[in-house]
Image 1: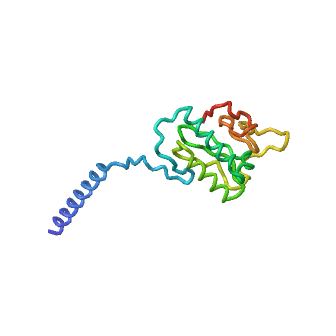
Image 2: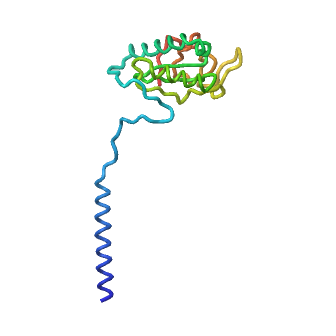
Image 3: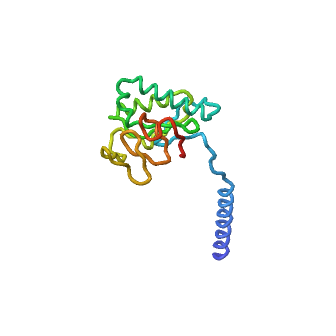
Length: 171
């Protein structure tokens, strides 16, 4: 009698376990692709319909004009590199302090047609990039862009940079 009771409990447990496994297997993973919430991006204008080379160039030109118009940020432009790919504005370099850093991000996210701002290579202080001594060159795989070095495949938008206004990014 005790054996039958144990057998019934084992069979019942097995059925519950099998049911749970099948139920879990039928659950589908989330397909939420609307979230771009990471620590290095800022969602901006989500109304951009078509993002071609002309739109990206317009984003870069508008962002540059906004920086130039700001008396605090304009002198910092030799260490603020930017380029747009598919309406994502990429920032590289640094601002002089956290207040200026937030101001650059605010301008970037308010720029027409920018969908997202990627600032994973943009900092609120210098020291995160190789800075070549005067007359020296950047290390292997890098090129000079304003006051600092960036990967050779990245676009340099800084006036006087290695490929300012002449190159497209390979990124």
